[in-house]
Structure formats: structure tokens, C-alpha cells
Length: 139
Image 1 (spheres, helix red, strand yellow):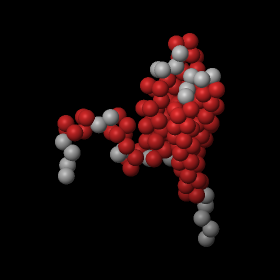
Image 2 (cartoon, helix red, strand yellow):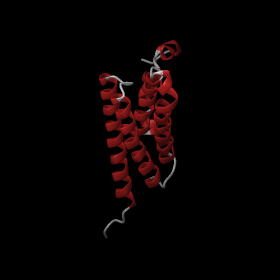
Image 3 (tube, rainbow, N blue to C red):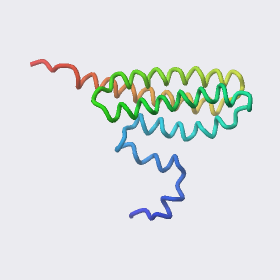
């Protein structure tokens, strides 16, 4: 049964993004959903940290998103995927810092850690598949 325009409009941004993975890739869509969750979460940081730590976390997350988009639309994916992978690692440390400073509760920190771990695994699988396609086949 086809979904009506009214039903599509009622869905949350995360639900709308959920069905686009076949078009853009699992890593990109997963990270996009993470950012949809992250931005409102960062708005809850104390005002003093919102513009320092919160901004740094948001910039790092958006940098990863840009790298994944670039990897999606180019044949030379290796550098973009490596940069995205490094960005995921930076995000892990920044979010750990936010948790240790008590700007992020344990439940949100766990959700962020799981999301980043999943995206990191997807990037790793993408890198492995790209290497396999790039290596010469034995005759």
C-alpha cells in the first residue's frame, strides 16, 4: 500500500532518513541519523560549553558527514573514508570528554558510543570492499 503525502509529513526526520540507505549507503545514512539525534542533544549543553565543546562536536560530526558524501560520489574513496574514520575517532573522544564533564548523561553517551561504533564498522567494511575492488586480480 502506497504511503500518502500526509503520512510522509507526519514522520520524524530520523524516520524519513531511515529508508534512504539503498540510495546513499548505510554508513552515510547511519551517520546522518546520528546527527539528527546529536544536534538537539548538544543544545542541552550548559551555555558556557555550548559554544566550545558542543560546537567542536557538531563540527566534527558534520566533517564526517561531508567525507562520507564525498566518498559516495567519487571513485577515489580511500582518502575520504580514512578521513571519516579519523573523524569518528575524534568524536568518540569529544563525547567521552562531554560525558566525563557531566554535560552528557550515561544513557545519551551510550547511545552516541553505539551509533559511532556502528558507523565505524560500516566505514571499515566499505574500506575493505573498496580495497578488494582496487587490488589486481590474479590471473
